[in-house]
Image (tube, rainbow, N blue to C red; front, side, top):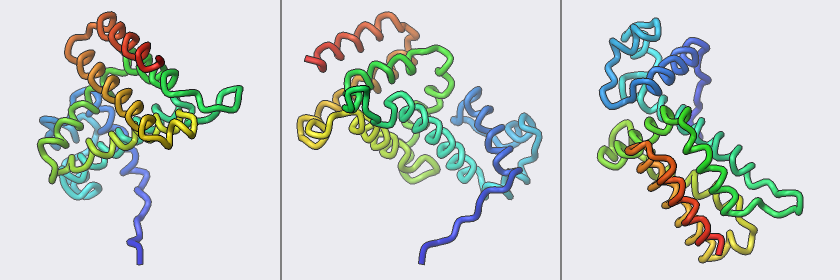
Length: 198
């Protein structure tokens, strides 16, 4: 029998949203409950009651970030919805849209949080971060697959093409976050997309 899950209370949702805004501004690496609780108008005791422990809060924050990531990816790729010709928009246009969003400076807080969670998931595979990196790879690949025409999507070549597209996006994003050199990184993405288009 499946385990029942209870809906979060209004207070839990309110505090999670406040904690998420805090994490976007300050990151998760050195998250301490006392400063977080003070900043969001709560107490460590209330956070522990609502989220179980610090790991539970981190897991809730990562799930919240993943929800944003999925909504953004789905919107940028139009959820694989067809263009006016009735065909999916295609891999290259989808990657162009995703890159334009990733490159926008106002999205850096979310992307830094994503990069931090991705890296922590790789080095702490059994902790609160467990599975985040793998889940986000699967999420992005699914969105890119939905943008490919069915014959390409279902082929081995289609899987290779979307994996390459994802590798380009991920590498470019990490480079951009490290260097803040959008003209150079953007030119490299456009160059790779021209090759992918061919």
